[in-house]
Image (cartoon, rainbow, N blue to C red; front, side, top):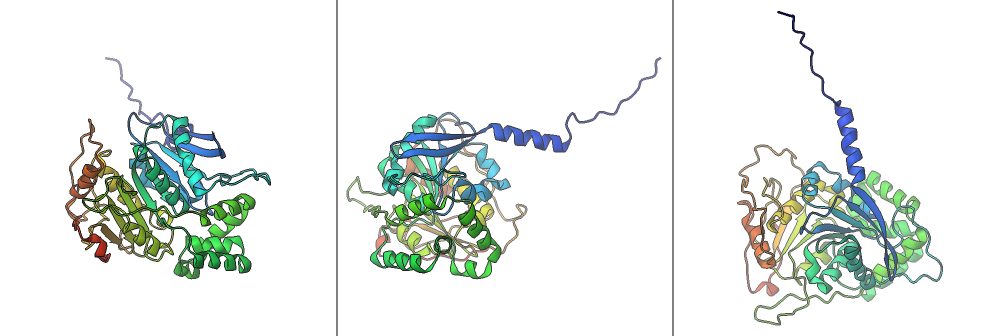
Length: 399
């Protein structure tokens, strides 16, 4: 009998080669587009391919930022990869705010926030997208909320971070004018993006964003964007009254409002919550978190988004370890997160093991929000028809 030689098998690709292959595939799935609109070309970045009838996640950034500086930390986080398996993502840059943007001509009239929101249906048409789940921060949250009010059939859900639905009052206008006389643009934007505590203590973070605003943004274009946002109109949304007008001006889709507890936008977000339908709205207030939850607490924000999307029936239920919903007198959910905790996913209490059906699903937004509430045993809420007179209360929870 002939001797049999045993040859040790080796992997076809080394780990570093596999990683390189994954990165190459990801780059192939990223396409940049300049979409023509009545207000000029809008730079968009599509990651992935829209999947059937599933909505696309549509993002819009805040003033002083573009889609990369606003969302890279969040979308590059390992926990976000699970969501990315189910959805394509379209990042929209406000006119002239993308990297390497050319300076607008002197006669260019920058669009108002209302006009910016009017470009979004054209962007969806360009990509052949039927509906979206919007994610906006600050100015971007305002734009997406306006879009959802005007085109409710195109928006299935909203994650709104640091939203301020109100026009600037006279005092705010005067403060901006005085600030403009005494501070450079970067300082004005830093106070918009970050809370006082962050500015005083987190010098590295502030220095990073100050450098970005000064060196990576087109200053002329940025000034026009900031001016447009500061000139925004009130969204004029109102909380529906049981038995009242059917067509009340409000957000008709499930909405998740997010704000850090030391954010300069806390009051505005809480005020916005009082104007929305409590059966479709959840407000999450993150403890130990500053003005940019997507940068400061990406893991917790990702989990909040995952739970929110699961409630809409688009993802299988997974274990939720960081979120606990507290009871509120208003009927809307207010959640606080304890920032000083381990991010380990193991042995952290009872977890939901159920999985949603990936077959035909109901598109009823009221039903969607009820499924959000029912998906895990660790979250609870109350509905109260007298929510308008109630005071919002948030519970500090450790999870």
